[in-house]
Amino acid sequence: MQKRHYLLLGGLAGAFLGARAVVRHKRFYSLAGKNVLVTGGSRGLGLVLARQLVRRGARVAICARNLDDLERARQDLAARGGTVISVQCDLTDQNQVDLMVCSVRKTLGPIDVLINNAGTIVVGPIQTMDAQDFDTAMCTHFYGPMYTTLAVLSDMRETGGGRIVNISSIGGLVSVPHLTPYVASKFALTGFSQGMRTELLRENIFVTTVYPGLMRTGSPRNVTVKGNHKLEYALFKMMDSLPVSAMSAERAARQIINAMMHGQSNVVLSIQAKAAAKINALFPGLTNDAHGFLNMILPKAKDGDRRAMRGHEAESLLSKSPLTMLTDWAAARNNEH
Image 1 (cartoon, rainbow, N blue to C red):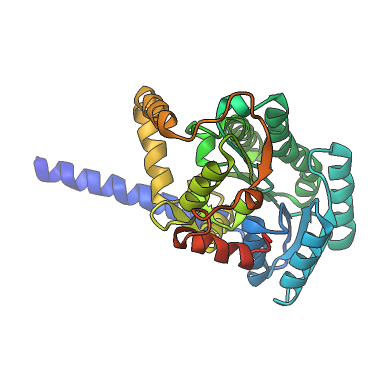
Image 2 (image 1 turned 90 degrees about the vertical axis):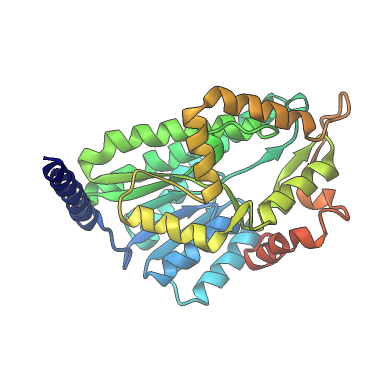
């Protein structure tokens, strides 16, 4: 009797794995010859993603606000043998988004894949934040992806399907102290992305939500810091650099593209982020209290000081120590300077 139960369980497990393999094969999406739009593609993770997309035979369009960054990124990608165009665009302005998508469409053709990657971070205690910090985060992480998604849907419907990738964050699942505007906007993106997944499946449009932890993209020098500027920046940069807390941008990009090509619904990057997500799902109250304790030992701000500084303006001996050299190397590689 017991042997029969084991055989039955084995058969069910085999059937499940077999069905899963069939579904993955059916959903597989080759990137060769596809037109891919990457927002925030001029530096950091966006540029790393664009490099790997070019390597897989995709025709890539990148957009960002800074023309100099865009031109350096375009030259980088073109030197790798890719078909690449760059378009200046402020993603928080819907009119600019619509014009940018039209420009990409006229040059490359219908957009097959959209990767919503553009982001911004303000680091500091809540008493240093104001309404503008929240508004900027929401416009960048929620409205920007919403505008681009709505703009490309007609292309995907016309061609019979497509892929959309939304780069949320572990902060879109678990609230982290000293990142409240960022976290709030990423939670909004998570809800939007998951909702679009369920709505668009029947049209053969697969939406993948990505939840990265810390990645060595080189981006800390371009974050905004508030409060105890030098200490906030040094701690953030160290956490972003150390292998025990952050993964390489190249490995993250490979996992993101693989998840998109197989039509996965969600992917959490890094062991640390997966552990945080699971613990928070099982023990949300405990997680909140633990973060409350963490907040007590994080740097405090001077009363009334709400000045904002860019990360590279808050460098110190601590932020330039050997503990942060991996992030400095990534910044040089990924156009963050």
